[in-house]
Image (tube, rainbow, N blue to C red; front, side, top):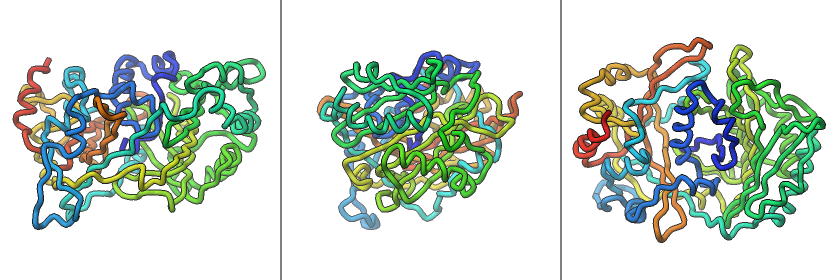
Length: 442
């Protein structure tokens, strides 16, 4: 997830919410489950989506090998080399289930939303990109059940008071693994739900709007001091001012204050999100793949009607780490960079990831012409949570060029873009890997 941060647990999310996410329900469910492997270190439920492979440790600790070079200026940090097959194993998951699409079609609320999401982060002078590893967690060592609930009972009470709801504490305490929270209005309608999770290096409280994902969302939830919504057409600077009151309210609810605010925009298929992150710059690792330390984040999304340019609060999360940000994510090595020109050449050959592509695809379809005159490109990091027999779990992040080409508009006024991803580090074995994908062609 680069830091792709609307973090929704498939274990906790209600089935009917996923079912109602789009008219193309099954497609959305497949996309959510496929992409959920990219979520950050923060959620131990990611273990449910792990790729279990005997060779994972070898892969994460240096690919097919490490080399030294006289012009490699990174001291003790190794120069890592990977094959296309290794990277595909990480980010693609089960290639046979990816379909034949070469690119994803993403639906955005507007062209302005897309342009606001794109980061101007491509440096033509870059010779090497870092490969990252997130700190491993041990969920068994975290607090559980009533002990964990009691630890945050004041937070639950303060949220209940601010939101005008009540929490069924007895129901929450009956889960001896991780407390499940249910918040009800006076007429016994469930307004919010959430959970608390704990490990040896973090604790997280997540509270959801109970209508998240519903295609017939009605009304916007509120705290005492205002409606939990934003105008997604506003600039980052304007949004920061707009959420000033929310900052104060959520600081009071979670009992923490932070000095800085970041705005992140993202999309999963047709679920556009704007995430407001309250954090401290002193506990923040910047760069192409940033890592926040302790933080509060509010993720907003649209319902089906975008005419008012409004988004409602889908989730609010509080992250409390036992490690500073510079220990939560570390560079395990550097890999030789692919230039933008080289990435365009790989794109034209069909050498893309996170989608099925092979020689037969290129022969049968005009995919390349669809996207070669792209509108936007940026560098983003994608990660996959993996496990092997001798490690509890490792998140490895690799850089990709992500290309965007506008396709058209929907009946509801949204815009569609083709999105294709090319690995931003030099790989070997492209021809062998993509020739092998022909067996999945259908």
